[in-house]
Image (tube, rainbow, N blue to C red; front, side, top):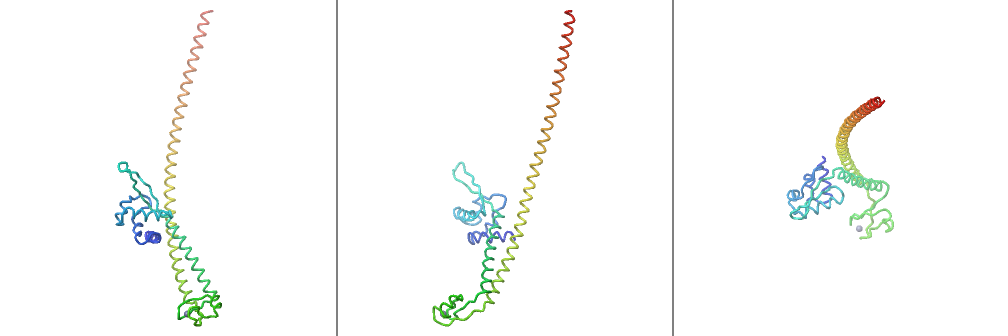
Length: 236
Ligand SMILES: [Zn+2]
């Protein structure tokens, strides 16, 4: 399902030729643009133009590497799955809003039509022209909005179903990102713990060394003292 949605997004932005990009790009690893161009059967410039267009919406990202010998850059691309889904979601919500608006307008307003010219008029325009077609002069007839409303509602239901799919994929994607974050957190936590343990051992060692040094010093001092008393005794 995710692939199908991603394909839809690519086509929306860059046309039918961009559709395979959804299959070619990975969400984690970067893919060499030459490989993409080859698979799309396009030149490198055509491929880049498509990808730039998609990246304008933040839906793909790239890194580039300089070829030291030839001096030019090669681009590597990956797809931003969450951003793609958010993009589609925004689009769907907008379409649904528009449809709801149309439905409401059909439910509350009158529309007139000239059957000869197949033109539709709002009540205001019809009234303005005394209910005559401003193209041919025929009397306009009031339109039955029921079929249009039915059609709009059908479309609205379809969009709702697609939105539910997008939301489901978004949820999965967020869970995936959370998992990766958790893994990285645990890893850094482990490193921190190890460093803490190392420090502990080092400071224990240091303490032991200090203790040893202190002991030696005390021993030396007592030795010196005793030798002093011996010599003073001798003097007496
Ligand atoms: Zn007419």
